[in-house]
Image (cartoon, one colour):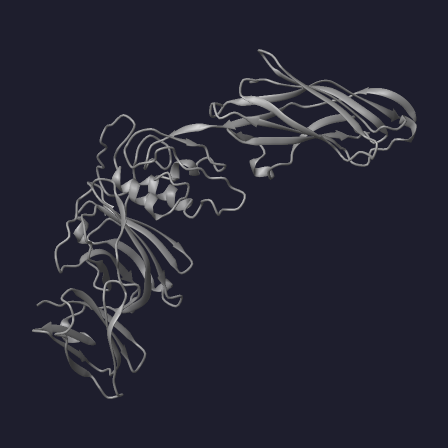
Length: 465
């Protein structure tokens, strides 16, 4: 036979969030009877410590009968909060059966001043019920357990210290990538923006998220974990709470940070319009090509301290590239900057991909968009020029395109915004063309070529006056 008892059950949140309460928010729980069905009433005192942070809000009687009534009174003293409650079914004991064991709901609010990581303990004092036990009416003393909830309050967040270990290093990229995508639209999770968020290396207040470790992975403090947070890590890389600059003895912990010497690779490039120190890129890979990528490595433009971190989501890749010494890359007119290289599997010469977005950060912590081609399909061009399938050159307003062993089906001139400036179609036996581009404004364009066999090629071309 089960012992008669009374217990607290959180019902305002799912079980994963039932062990904590958040500052500034209402929380509540239900009072349940266990192994007490033949009863017409229960009374108890409920106490909680930390009354300076938790205030009683309201109550609601459970569904225990049409004639049920309750008396609930709260009292706060210097050491504890108190709820005094009496709940009755309104009928005689010998004819009263409680079919729903939830007798009362109580709601409280945790004040915004509540300190993070503090705890509150709720405990019953002298809970009793009138019940028929073994066919005899009795006043039963109910057993109970304390209910303990942890406070989620304001915490100090240092921008870039995503794992909250006091130092901004390579492990913070991994932590941010783990929680990438969490934000206001994530179901059953509350996220919060930081107060006066910035990239400046100082403690910034934020309300702890429901998923507590993710609070620190939101490096820019906007309440959402996205690619911008990776840029904040790059901006504060090597900083710690003691303001001591850390020096890495080697690059063993960053296996991708190496000079690109692979013959079977091609660069992904863009032309920044202002200084950059690191770049975050979101791109889609053709589903048939995703498994053809052996590695992604940073370009030489970021120097010998370059690093690159990436995460693959199905056919989507999110990555950040920069340098450990925050090397500043200055824009150069009519010159592309290589970001990274796709290293392809043996025997693979090209992949198809689409750049969705590019965000960058400068030496002052400002984050901004970089306009780039929206869709590019590259053929590997690292082999000797005589072995290239497509050769594209430009001189004196004339564009020359020549294919070896293939025929041109169509050709397009695309600007850095992804807009098609000119488009041409050709008959099935055209393998070279000469185009007069004197009417196109001088800047960097991409020449994209589709062959009659269905292959795609693209190369950047600088058009000068």
